[in-house]
Length: 125
Image (cartoon, rainbow, N blue to C red; front, side):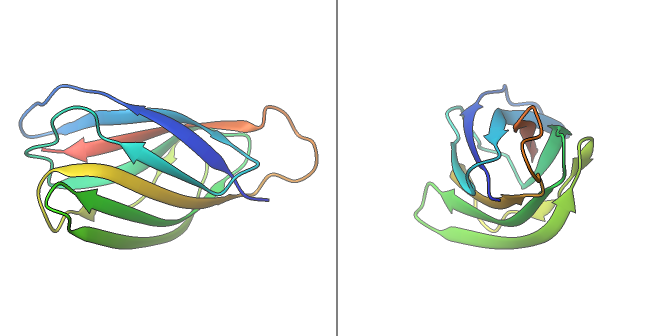
């Protein structure tokens, strides 16, 4: 089974630490999402994806990061992430990410409920 999620991105810039760039609910019936960065992402040097709440692990396959200058960076994650876990830190190759595409799969079997995982995209300044 594969999953999809929709994300709203927000946050205020702060120097020298992790900040929330967006939060989302992942539906267990799909396999990807595009996260639009709606606030200034200047100064963000790295990203990671947190699974805050999930009934089963999500297999995060790749993060494709698109930058304001048109450059694109693909990062292989290839990891099962349960609730409370997170992806590795991904150092950015360019400045100002404008969107991130997340490809993932669900480990949910049968008709278990709820069929949503809570996710959070973090950025490091």
